[in-house]
Length: 152
Picture (cartoon, helix red, strand yellow):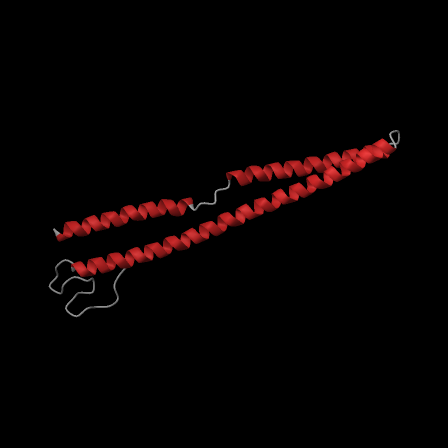
């Protein structure tokens, strides 16, 4: 990042007006500015990644709830089937209740199981941000080493 403020007696790039290397203070100021900018950008990335992960988890949790409701409806229909079957064992309308109950139960169970599987594999931690933070740490360490070499 270029420093827009020009200090009298200094060139635009922070070097002494005589054409030498940048002053040590300018190097550390630039390092501090770049580091602060990098940290702000990493925090923005972490927020965006967490927001995306939370939305995905919420969507999958809602699908688990819908699957549970469908399974509950299936269980109610199966209970109605049992009542009808016991009350009227020889009529055919109980067969319809059995088929509908089994279908609801299967649909709800399949939906709940698939959503739970997705939910188990969903990662909430901002892994990309953690990786870039490690890279940033290595970059900052190399910049500090370079500044120390320049001092020597």
